[in-house]
Length: 300
Image (tube, rainbow, N blue to C red):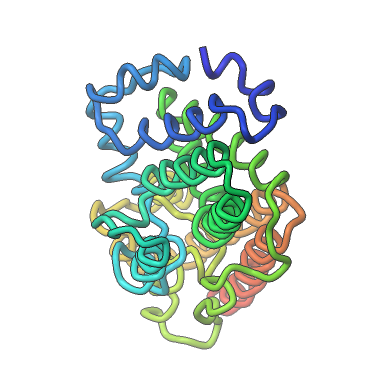
């Protein structure tokens, strides 16, 4: 089974066909809903999720789209999707509707790696390598580690195991790829972080956009946060649920959010000591400091 040999595969030469097949399979497993991904999951030695689990995570709980994590509004589409679609077009490819879907990006990465490994043209191989590294740096590593940690936190075991394996493989890719020292464009041009001086609406806008806070707050997180803050949880869009929590008990809700900010700063720290991981850690730390100010104001 591919998963049984993960440690061996990630240490082998990047020219090994099995390596690219592993990455392609990890992408296909999330991009293809059950039962179509059953054979893929079995090939990875992963449990096969049922339709409700797949939908609960990848459609409702934590959609695997870069735009949600890198876009200024924390939503599908918009600037975040346009940036990724532009990369597809730069390769001479037609960008699919879900160009920023992690499954599609992993499969594209595998295609570039496989083509790089199989060509005898040194110049073409170098072009493919640079394209592959740019894809990893700009459009995968720029958001996927935090996303995969968030998926693990949803408590859906079959998909949590997929997320764990995918994160292992991406860390290996990152450690061996020739990446630039500068931040990805989406982080260099990131919107302003959370501030303590804005309105409640301003704060809600920031809190649901990971790129503005360094935190990934899923519906499950908010439901657990409402329980810990001893407030009612109102089902619906995350911004709506957060507003209801803050209206019921701002002190308890801000205190819970502060704990989340500290947790995410630690998550990013453990992801690595590269510029991208440090940026996310610093943004989460800034959010924690801001929430401390907001909490002090709410208590007074």
